[in-house]
Amino acid sequence: MKRTLFVALLACVTLMFASCNKEKDLNGTNWKTHTVVNQEMSMEGMTATINMNIDGTMSFTNATNGAMILTTSGSMQAMGMTLPMDAETDTIDFTYTFTGENGTITMKEDNESISVPFTYNKKDNTINITQTQTDEETGLSMTIDMTFTEAK
Image 1 (tube, one colour):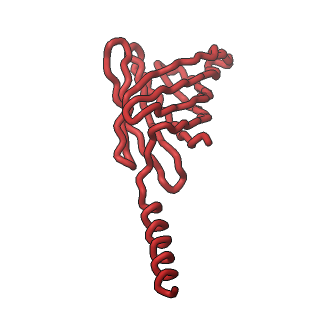
Image 2 (spheres, one colour; image 1 turned 90 degrees about the vertical axis):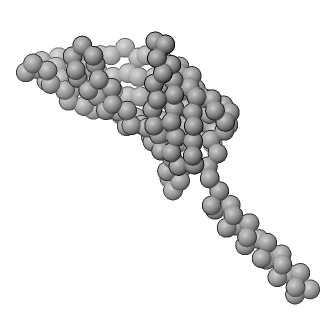
Image 3 (tube, rainbow, N blue to C red; image 1 turned 60 degrees about the vertical axis):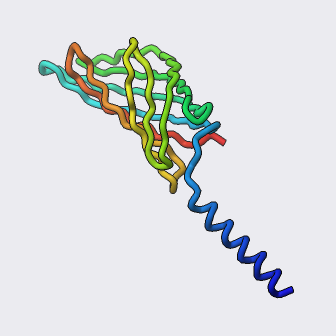
């Protein structure tokens, strides 16, 4: 009897440790973000402040594919005026790779592949994406840090 109880206890402890070290599987998971961007930009002596809200969902539909829906809205302040930005929703289909801690999302835009790295924070159960976008005409850059939490 003692031996059976010991074996059962050992099996439970082994399962506990095995489940703690398991890597995250993104297949079939859904994530959400609410990101606020406040960034000042200067060009030719003029300064503007961009205030933007990004609400989004990211779904990993299988082991290699997913989709992201991002809605952006906000305003720009310059020369004492506030100009509203119309809300815009984009749906982005992507493929991805994931190693359990780091990954890459690859999407097509104007027949060009764009790869965006991401990291998974096991402690917080979050996915972090940092992307810098540069306007080709003006050379102005904007960095956006998005943190996605898993939707239950």
